Image 1 (tube, rainbow, N blue to C red):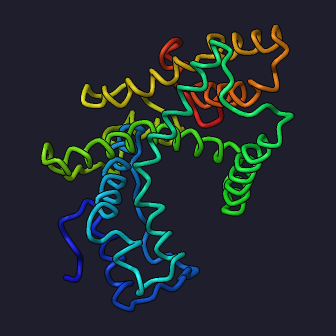
Image 2: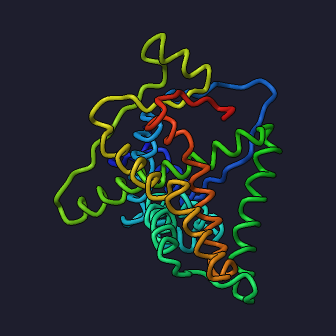
Length: 280
């Protein structure tokens, strides 16, 4: 009783509605945990769950319950923007795919898409990137995480944005034109077998899975190959050095290099058939 149904994320839309009715949230962190949640134990289950979450959150933004308008006069602007951050998870897939593909492709041709390092316009790019990553790193370390853990979080964000969020965006668009209907996908919260449990305990990233996940893994593999180290990064650096234009291509080389580093488990799975642990 009291839950708002008809949405893939009924807890989010219920929270929004009761907040608009005057309810207020408080931070409650007792020494003894009241209950412990469970989360997916494999990469595929994680991607499927985040597809459902992001699809449901985007449904809210595209409905009459859009926090910016539904909460107008009832919630503070910061509160409404907080809801919108989750509501626009799926939309992040578009700019993410752009940054994962276009700069690398243009790097092969030696075409600069960003300001040179000596230009004043370089400062906003450097500031946003440094501030965002520094803040998330500090937040992660304060939450008793490790540097390796923070790096894996960045890796998972990239994988989710290029798969879960992309498919959530497409499904929402199809639903708006009546070509599709939202489905509630259930994900397992426990290991399916002993082998899966062992891999989960060792923090191994697993790519071998059912054919139903083919579309997601095709996108992951494609973006990884586009940025494959010696294909884009080295060629781009050679062109930059030869033309003495490192400043103009600096940001693109950095972006391509970071994407390659984040995709190391994918390369190992594709070419070496090697299991990837958290420490790598």
